[in-house]
Image 1: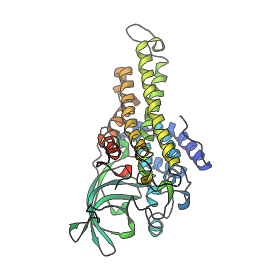
Image 2: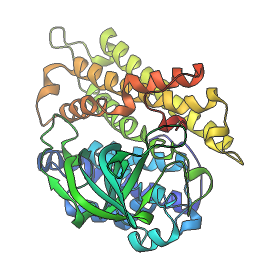
Image 3: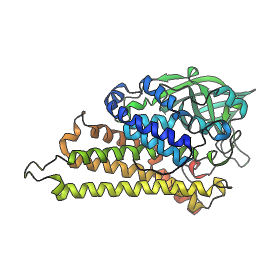
Image 4: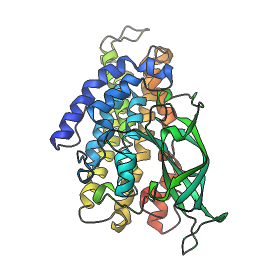
Length: 395
């Protein structure tokens, strides 16, 4: 595995634990895929080594890891199992959300720094303003990690007296809402092509009272400050999942190549032009994609010294947002190309290539890899309306 950063002792220790766990995750990849959720013992292993607390900044009692360091941990876990890496990435966001809540809410919802949060940020619900808070109703999809979560978030549009609430300039108001897992009904819908082990089921609530201080806005940090309390923070570490899986697939096929021959001629893969070219091409895609993700995140992290995200030049703000869909798409191409090289042996379920291909296909349907992200970057540059403004720092 490549290194993206040096850092504090907590980072080095956590990364070593994550890399040490990867072999076990790989050995249990089929089990996780078949179960459609993470086994309880793996969840607790992740908790015990500190994965779920890694996004808490130092001022909130966390290890103070940088976003590049966090991405490296997710990459290491994903090298072992894609779904585990994805769930770790989602669940560890507890520390990010904490910065947008006030101290009272953090104390109530997060008495320890190892709790797992699941949920969808898209405003698919309806939150009616009432005295002291909101009545939240709705059904949300893609609740990754919700089968083992302690806490759940959900995005919703705000209504006041039955009417859609708007800002002073007429924009609709959306907020995030925090709940305990036992307040939410989980609906078993996750029978998917890939990422099966992520347990990304639907969930719903009906007229649930959420106190005002248990709701938040990604543009209004409260108990947190600095680089970890920006609207794009949540998305920064997402490339770690496909990068870890793609690296694992590349290493797997390179190991296979040691003993492989072309059936029709007996020529070793080591001497075969097609095998040489495809492996070289895939490594090229990986090197470029990973370099883009790592470098743009490093540049952003450094640029945030003394500045807010929204204050940065548009050209700088769009860089990580463009690197992310590129990574997802490039990693999907890598795994698909490796499957072409290996041939029919790759389609049988004992082959990890089967799971990697399905996982990559499913991952790239996520909004983070959509054309909307690229359109939004172009809109930021041109002063137009981005379809997904949040990660570009636009309300």
